[in-house]
Length: 275
Ligand SMILES: [Zn+2]
Image: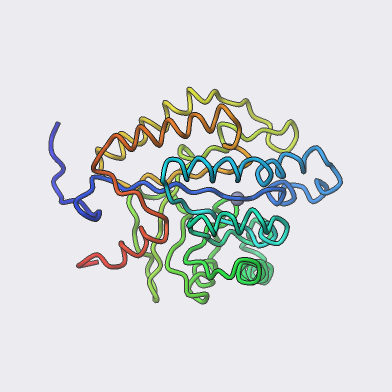
């Protein structure tokens, strides 16, 4: 195997960076797909599972494995599940902005996008006393004004686009770092299922473990950023949490990995000499 030509972009010569992110969407995920879901207790219960079971179980797992993660929390979820949102914050995890009611931004309606963005910010401030450092758009849907909103609110990163395996800085001032995501590293395409609103076959945790393991090993070889996106209501089931724990332990066995929150990766990228 040929050695990488360039030196590591990561702290202390780490080979790659790993950040675990969790989008705490709860019921808002379903309300955004179908406002009528509010009158369907079965649909809403899928989202509520994330708050009732997913978050506490995840926090226990992350504490046991001594991993700090980033949770992207819609403002509506902070207002409706304040105890769980505070438990995330109080466990030392980063809280990021994830819209208000998981509204999918529409490029043709910038006024509504701005209103939802500001309402989400306000809710995180009121409920959690947090000023987020970064933004993950619901469904990763950006519009031409989204990065302007990110800058206006003093944030330093976006984690939404799929065009690299390394962070990069968007053109414009002040600088905003992109922390790229990938569908292959999202739990939803494999596991999120509803017969009408998300009709897809579910995958086995074993199959997904294999995909994520190989993505990590490849990312480690390439020296990239492994940015895993999970959802408490999706990953927070027994078989899947066991799989996630297995993955964390596999990554742990590599000594030259930088574990970081999204905010830490962004701050590091901004401080790199010669950026
Ligand atoms: Zn989401």
